[in-house]
Length: 194
Image 1 (cartoon, rainbow, N blue to C red):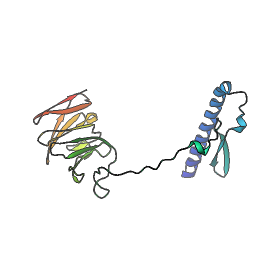
Image 2 (cartoon, rainbow, N blue to C red):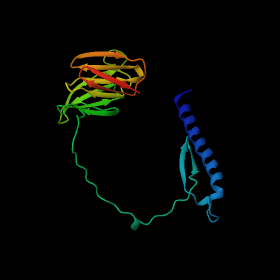
Image 3 (cartoon, rainbow, N blue to C red):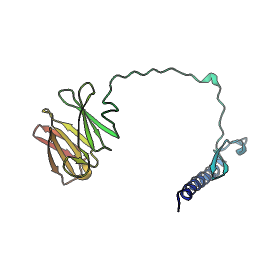
Image 4 (cartoon, one colour):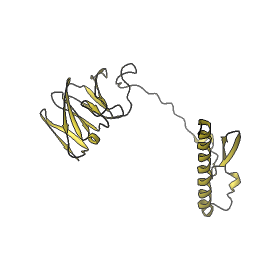
């Protein structure tokens, strides 16, 4: 099946789903509609499928709004704090952030499989980890913690491991369960929990 056939098939599937759901919705709503409602008054959207244009009903009446009821407000945004820049750091899916005693900020980027470290002004310092299954690599890092002396703990429950990153040294701990959290107890030990 070539690309054009796949696209046409996708459009047909979308159109069929819209029509099918509109039929079900119209049948369910028929008993709840006031007697004066006329389905012919419902707005329609146009869907182009190949060279044909199909009009599909929205199954509800759009009420006109007067412009006097609307209130528009100008909103001005100011940056209070910024982390990194497009030149040195892109976040794919940041999910967790923590700071250490020096004010450094660690951001867990789950999709990238890494932790990015910034100073207290938001300037990028370094990146820990990458996607993978080996030492210093993560598939779905879930939680991080930082010890008082600056060691970084990264929990990857799907790989059932915790890693402690201390500068350029990495120590990996294999776990028997799939924990949902981990934290340092002190600079030499940590706990993981469900």
